[in-house]
Amino acid sequence: MAKEFYDVSYKTYHNERIKPVMFGGVETHPLYVQVIYDRKSVFFKSYYFELFSQPKYAFLGTSIQQINELESRVIEYIINTRSERFYLNDMIRHYKKESRDLLDSFDGSFKIWLGDFLRGEGLPGLAAQMESNPELVAGIRLWDDLKSGLKPEVYERMEERVFEYDTPYIPLAWYIREKFPDGPFCLPAFEWIEEQAEIEIFLDSIRWGNGFEKVIRAIWHLSRPKGYFP
Image (cartoon, rainbow, N blue to C red; front, top):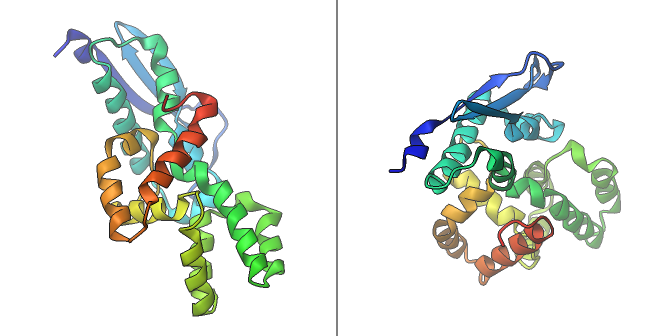
């Protein structure tokens, strides 16, 4: 193993120089990450702390421990895949690329589809209510509420048609729920790369025809503007 691998270390910490924010109903100083290499350091905000601080994800009850575990997974991935040629100056760029939550990235487009579906089912008021402030509620929570609140035949149509749409939010959400039933509800970009074979098997198990090809295409279109997954 290259010497550079052993020289890289990291830690998370609460930045007490910054005003606390609400996290899990408690005022908490934002979480930051420090990466150290060759006696030099870079510091950056924890993407996952900011992600799960959003009001729409409060219902998940994501813990700081789970966020620390996510940070460890992504940073270890970056270090391990670049152990022979690690450059501290590239760390933030790699982190932004690899940590990105694909579920959150598809959340907005899924809710647009959901609004159209509800209107088509003669529920324009419900669609308008959902669209009035979409950032207050996560797509998966809307799905769960509709599953329990809609007539069974309407839910069946919703489930059938969501597989016809090119945004793979719901199938990927089901995959994460099966793999991590206790959370966190998150599919980082680097784990998509590592788990493609497992995801393909899962999509086949729920009988989603050409679903894997749809996922690949959707992620390619999602990431192309910012240069992800070249």
